[in-house]
Length: 444
Image (cartoon, rainbow, N blue to C red; front, side, top):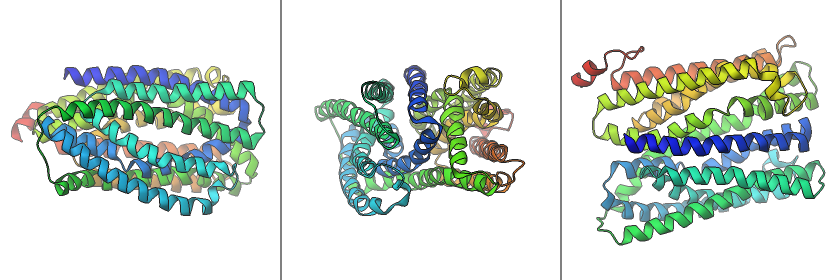
């Protein structure tokens, strides 16, 4: 368990600094882009993340899981086959994206170069995913932590220098904002792939055993395909969420400009602040996937139960403290972005959304490690349908508007967390209130 806690510490420490930098990044964007520009930036990000997700093919999850479950002598061969798969997949996706992206209307409101900047991400993310998956599987979380910190630092430095030295119009400012984001991914790629090459050279000097290519492909695809499908659905729902929210607000009588500004305040200010403590949840998720996979492959249910208990206690302690601070100090926190009471109100009303998402992230790691991908997918589909349904119904009413959006988001988060938790409890033999740990593990 020592390496498990060490990994969480490294990731959490770097992520804390990274999230602090992320807040500074969003403050710069808020001041340089204004409410409408920030709304446009937050509207395009989910579409970019959708492409990033396709490029990664969830290789960090599948490779880390497979590496954690196999002996060291197989790692060199696993990586060799993983790189071969990545080369083919990245080339096919790049060619397909080159043909399709020019015709995607979501990019029409942005600088023409944005389309081509996004194309650059495909090979970068694909090959970074191989290195990230290996380091996760080997529990070398220090390298993951450094890469996460580098991403935020480079993005902040790029934005600060460019906006300080030059003046841009709105379209150019959006291009700079997206360009620095992609530039930071390039730096992460160079760092992780350099460290990966060093590690791979060391593996060449060690005794190794071969696995058939079909075996490696089957194991990687068994995780990557359903996990990518799950992530694609989440990314797709995230990409259309801005349009659903703004469409509902416009139906309520709000103008398109005001609807975009309100969305920008929600996502660029309230969500940025509210998700600040999620660096702990994300760190837990990264460490838990290989840890749970290895423990489950060994059939150690008692240890799985203890891990779940520890994760739930830790999440409850920091989650409740975080949302309490956000609730009582919302005006002071949101004033760092805009002198407006609106984002403060959004931040206060969204406390269930943030709190339950802190639980959702590590619980998804448990579900991945326990091979419950289908169940995870079903949970996300149902929670998304109900959340979007409530948004379309309530936000379109003039008396609800943004309050309706927030009710839909809160409901979806609570429902998803409860479904995840009950499924995990059933799988590892724990009651809803964490009772019967030893008895259930013994029975299994």
